[in-house]
Image (cartoon, rainbow, N blue to C red; front, side, top):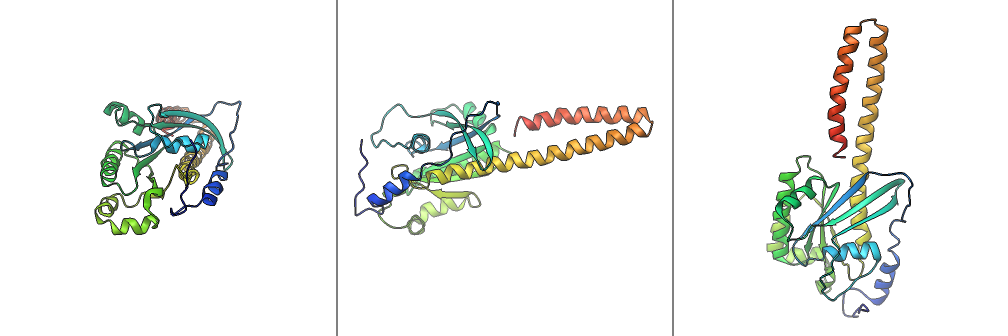
Length: 257
């Protein structure tokens, strides 16, 4: 189905073509080595445009006609900012069981919380999901708030429109501190930017874990050498036992990173 861009909308045909060309986002990277899969979980109210976001990002396509074959899970390899990332995109359906929703939240490396622009019901659903995420994830991982369908805005800027709608603004105020971005899958507005913001959060976690692992390894080597030279086998034995216990804890943390 061809996209139609009306001249009296906020976007022109030239804008559409320009944004279509921008979807050279991250070049796909074929790696021979196995990489830890990084999960981005997309959560939102029914029909707020979750699958459309993923479809536009992966395939640069958009269908304006509702259909039942919505994308729920996808896996792609990408090379981004020097990192080889194996990305799993999971769209959490409103029909998912509570157990599955909690599982996806716990195992997520990044979370997109999606709502339909200017829809009070969708925003209220977002607030409920946000509170659930903060309850389940004790590590306070970053959450990206994604507003969809800004092409239905009628010409005014998203920020101005929200300021004029006090009900929606008051709900969004409750999730202050979370990063936010306005998107349109139909006209390919800020789609790449939204996913790259999640990639940045993932890379930050990888970098933080890598630095702590290097510090731990360095301490292990220095203390082992020092105790070995001290000719005190009992202390060396106790230290190595302590390290083995730390390794168990480290493996548990690795599974979360």
